[in-house]
Length: 481
Image (cartoon, rainbow, N blue to C red; front, side, top):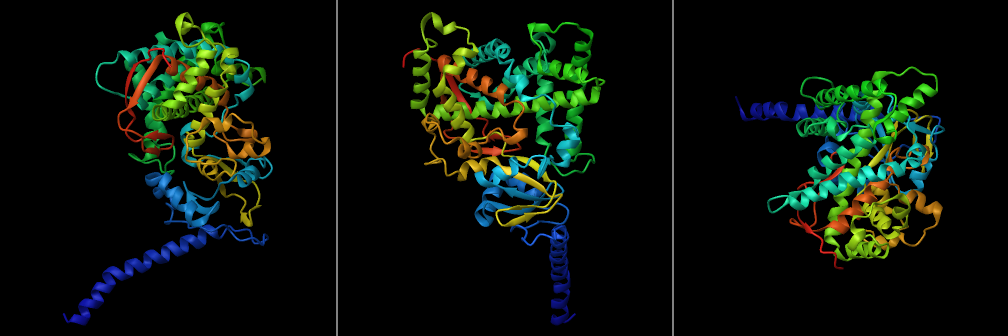
């Protein structure tokens, strides 16, 4: 074979597949944007649609925050992409997010990716309203304080040079969520059984945002198997509730309220829907609060002066030293801890547990000079919106004092959105606020600690967490500030 023939063969071997691939990508891009609304004169947002069928899902799953930051630098505050099997527009910035969140049921509606709907259930999010949490916060306090105090005592008594904070906090938050939201009593689960549930839940969460392909060993397949383990345990609990006339513990948990709400509307209790709602409650009340509590430990460990200001506030309220050290907290006392609340807000600003929320365009809408076609998914970014908010100065600095001064209500409303916003803000935000404040109080008045690896590298998968699990050395707090 001559030299020319060898060159031609090499070109056919390497160049032809490349050309076919590039052609497939171009045809995919044309296919994705073919749903552009021709009656709207505005163009689609800038952006790329990625690989055929896969879109840019793989890049997002593997790179997460790095991928999103690259997109923001390249395309700005609104861009098109293709994620989780759907053409998608991602938006950020207070004004853009305001337009989306205030357009609920008129311009957009909640629509999670197909994998999330398959695993959590097509009926998510739940029917338990935030107001129902508001009226029952006082019942949460003693249970949360009991669990947090017992957990911190274990940490202080732990043998060894360090403790991995993130898995420990996840287990704590799981126990609290099981008791408060689903009414599980401590005696109902052995340590091994509890650990099995925790592991199943983590497996389910890891695979929530995956390609909608249910084949053996796929992310969706693994997520569904883990969900079935959780559903079996929840069904046991639901049937026990149905057999009892009065709730255990002296108060009605969130699942009991949901059951009563359903019956009060004259509807039959549907076991599958109840299991899906309970699983979603656990998701909202476990993973996100564990992320936030871990970030609290990290930020307070890095900023001892802030921890000291928290302790000073506790001292002024008689919650730090002497006989008051064992004082039971209540809602009245918690609401007086303004600076502690600002520490939590600043933590959620810099490290929001959930990076964004999902909507679907009910009709073609116009946003910032672009069209978002009917039927396209819309993701509003929480983390990016915090990063670019004009409301905040020195955005990279951990400074809880920035929240001590009231901001103009309308502008701050969409510049700080850790719980989302509009008609469908996080159903568990009242529960989360109480839990995180109690956790901060008990931590500050019980422990001193050192982060052994320094500032952690944070990753999103899909909840924000430290890559190294935050190895930390805890010692008892002396009571001196």
